Image (cartoon, each protein chain N blue to C red):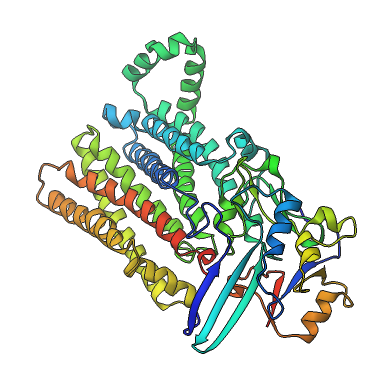
Length: 183
Length: 326
């Protein structure tokens, strides 16, 4: 169940600054020992327009740590749960590998770890609890990624969302995602 | 999707997620199919027993609930094979999550066994009971006194056990549809029709298995008529589902396109609608109206249709996932 906390962790991705260098992907893999062939975060590069008038949007994507998480609702054992700051985590020793959470996630943010349990982005809570930023945010060389607490009006993420236009992915699913993309 | 979209480079490449979601293979449709068959067999055999309270019953009908439990065990074995973290399967029974249809299902499965055993034992006549008590299984495991005790309790609560079979069977059939229907991420599954559709299909496929058994003429006549009613309701539910998809928002159109021009569309119309519903309904109507000798083909077509319905929905549903759309 949700821990008693007023925090609401969120990530803000400035798509105008991202150069798709994938340092966030490598940092995550190294920090969280993500096995070879799997990714907890990834890059999506979307090209739109008509040549030569093209627009490129680079998005560093990961679990959206939704406020209304369908994966947590679908989990039959309570392995998928809402943790500190609204971060959605998986308790590995409670996971049966039934994959109901993967089916429920509209973002494809989860995968089956080679050891059998379901794995995903944790917002690097182990680092955040020590006062550090998630590994992907810390390593980003262009300042694309911002992490913080939306319940604090003076946090970076709150200020960015007050002052910039943004979008979330698949808002029509009603999951209320907490990864925001600045446009 | 933006009309001027030129290219999307997706760097995720996780197994079973990319390039298109495919987490559930043959195990899940086989389980959903057998779960539906078992639901139908329990509901129909209990309803027949309640209808003719003291009438003679065929040997096939007497053993149908126990056969159903055997089929359910095969389905549960398929479900177990699908688990990726098999050693932790017991975790299903250390929690009850009201928001999770899979949690409901795991507990419903536990209730189906005692309900099926109680109603099945209560339906056995004296010859069958003697054969059961003399069987190598009961004697070898020294279960005679336990079986005698269950038989006594089943007799004491005969009607209650039959109603328990109907309720447990209905819950089983309904939940298999709701399990998929609550997935907001899969437009093709995310419809409230799926619960009643799977239950009705379960009743129809359960009837088909009963019709393949050597039932008495009277039982066969009743089951065939109930099967026709179930197929008719199933056709209505599929029409309602298609209307809902065709007239809904963007997500519904994604679902609709899977069934009208997606890779599984031709299989859906050929195997489910024509071979699995229209053909057996017509054949059964002719058999009942003209009192013809029933064909084995009719229930076999129903079973092909029931399995195809689940197989195609599981495959096409995953293809409709939002996770496939960057």
